[in-house]
Amino acid sequence: MKKFLYTLYLKLKLDFRNKEILITFYIVPLIFYTFMSIVFTSIMPETKETLIASMSIFAVTMGSLVGTPGTIIEYFKVDIKKSFKSSNIPLWVIPLTSFVSSFVNLLFVCLIIFVTAPIFFEAEKPLNILMYFSSYALFLVATLCLGIILGLYSKSVSKLTMYSQLVFLPSMMLSGIMFPAEMLPSFLRYIGLIFPATHGMKLLSGETVDFFSVIFLVLIIVISLFLIIIKLKKLKYENA
Amino acid sequence: MNSLIDVKNLKKFYGTNKALNETNFAVYENEIFGLLGANGAGKTTTLECIESLREYDGGSISVMGLSPEDALKKGITGIQLQSSSLPDLITAKEAMKLFCTWRGVDFRNDLLDTFGFKNMYNKYYKSMSTGQKRRLHLALALAHNPKILFLDEPTAGLDVEGRVTLHEEIKKLKKMGVTIILASHDMAEVESLCDRVGIMVKGNIKTFGTPKEIALKTKNECSILLKTDKKIDFDFFNFEIDKNGYYKIKTEKILETIHEIINYIKSNDAQLLDIYLEQPSLEQRFIEITKEAQD
Image: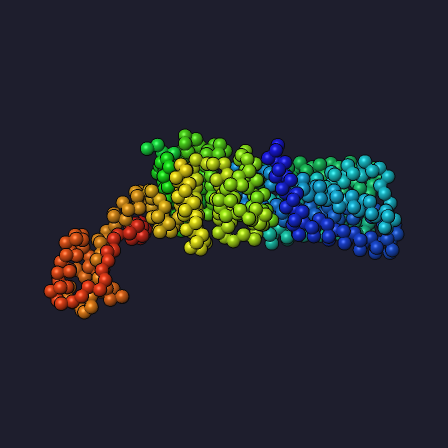
């Protein structure tokens, strides 16, 4: 446990120094939040009801699908992976510490939005805060798992960028965070259902629990864990 | 002598390509054993199989009676890889602490000091020179005081000063009782460091011995190279003139031939300007073995 905790502490420190993490976890989501909040609340005042949820979902999707995989792929480059293996550091430590570090950072961003949105943009706070944060945690875990899979399975940074955008952009357009999903043609609404952001939006902005979305996110987590374990077992001897 | 590592009939395939073809060798306690070979000969694959970083397809490997995986887990082996890296933003001190933590030993600032990081504990990995990175990886490989150390091309990419320093450290480690397996294609390095050498060609070790023993197996005879102040006809010797104007006389009887040469020069009223002996080298034997394998 001491070994893992030190590695986690070190990972948090390294992420704190990392400019890419700063940009993808903090700067871009918070600039986007500020800018979009000004625009949305002035042209569509009803967005104040879902502002906290939609901006938190943007931050999580951006951080998990663009930021986290980048740090994973850096560690799983052959040479760093080999250095760790040659010193008997198990490979599972890398995705697990990345997961925890990203979780902490993105939870912090969410708290910034949660606290500031009502003050600066008159955003409505969720009625049930416990339910809101439970849903947020579930959505965050599911999206982070997806991000770790992207980082583990992508063979190069350029391919990772492409795969990340293939998930990130439709998540933004079809999940209902930019405009209500009901405005989309029905086939696009159905396509939107394969992205965690759509279910995150339903859970975070809804007044009652959407069980279909909960099951969908839990399913993503279970499948992701399975794929992560398979990949880590394979990586033990792959490319030494 | 006790063998610490026994490799028997080791086989490794990459697809249909046979990388290791029933390789056999043993490494004895407190020796520096060199694996010499051209690029692609199978040195790194052999090392990585023994290090437990790569699966092998046949044969057996014993590291002090254990499997390579158990030897790595128990901290018997320390590994400096041919190409290794660390996260860009980790410092030398953090890297050492991380590796010591996972090896279950106290922080080794002594190793950082020894390998030239005394005033650079907080230097980021990305700001280190190639030599500093190599030295840091060697320090990390030694964090848990391994009994056996693997060095794969340890001085590749280093400048002369870096090479000399690293060679000195390797010699010190041997004096401290560490058994070292070194893979290299640098003849001078192997000749100066290794007690025994195995020359690897196409996934197999073709010959073993001390660098001197291997060199003496060369088909080339010794050559006496000499320069005189005027042209002399050395017809009765088997001679040729090299590009620097030196007479090159091949012989098996060195002393006798030198004596004859000096007398002959005197009888021709000439002066000897320079003379030296060229003995068979490890490099010559290595080239011969590689050529034989290609034929």
